[in-house]
Length: 516
Image (tube, rainbow, N blue to C red; front, side, top):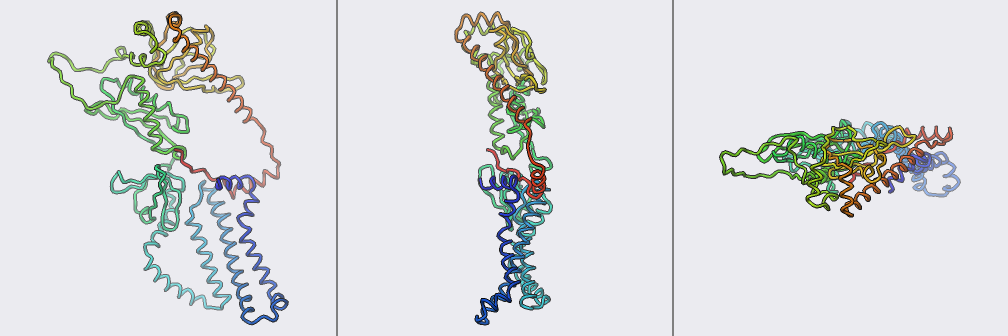
């Protein structure tokens, strides 16, 4: 909360934020500047009867204080305007603590030399010679620490990673690789936050030697691969259709990105079945890799279950009849969707004979991605059931050029109730997002089943009412968003100029909190 309040303060009141960062060093500097400028008057008026020791303390103390307060102010100005302002604005990320500390160390080192040379009249050459000998002794004793420091500086210069990036530090074995988000780079170590919410501290010397994979460069998104093995009896087209609908059902640009587009690849043939690779992309700042795998695995398994399929397993088949043939991959006309209908909440309440008659008289429609089943306003009395694939329901709102998405329809969904119950126009446009298998039922048969079964009619009415409610909420949301986007932003010319000027020095830092 404090960090968010600080960022908000920098954006809204830059002058106040500037004073908060600089008033302490500026106060010390002005105090010692006034003290040294009025030193003679102070000694005569207030310390006339003081001892020589007190006078020497005031004499030397004011000079040393001026040097140190000047160094303090200079270091703070460099931090605010250079590191947190210019450099952070160019990189778009917060600057690690290490370069700030190195800058402060250099400023105060020069200040100490200046104090010894001007206040105590010591030879600068002798000071540098003495410091060189001391540096050699310290360097031998602290060689590992110094190695960590300089490797940390080199990593900052090379910019192989930045604070907020998700990286993998490669170890000797794959299972010991470290995957985490960079949260801090200091003098000796780099700190990573793992997906288990633990902090891993890695010495900078180890980071410099290890092979590093940065998941957020050159692009801020990266690809995640999941493997599924399905039986050979499942045709590749059907397998890709079901797997693709499972991953595309989560593509919302928050959890799973819609661009680059998720894809399914037939990877290799195994003894237990065909291995398919599901590929999708995520933004690590929105969701962790493990969380994204959990969500996609769950969605794909649910789509496989609704399709009556399951991942393959090792098995042994024994054929007693030598003349019998091995099972072959079925053609598109031989694919059975009885399991899908039996698992449907709507058709489960029907008798088996009614379900058989329903599917026997249904016509199958295969849609390609982007194809439209029907459009908003069309007149139609057919009722539809999505056996496999993923559909999108959208509406056109008056005054809005683009279509507004209402909902996604996943496998096992039924729709088009308004054509059967109300004989009215279609209330939305249905478009295929993946390859889809849809069954179209004649309205007369649906009418007969609704007359025979009150539960069947009740579910149809419930689905139609829920669909109309979602459409009303979508229209309300789109109208509110339109009004908000068109609201004028009122700012005075002077205020806008001041905010633009200070925003260059205090750019907004991105929130690196990982969503779980």
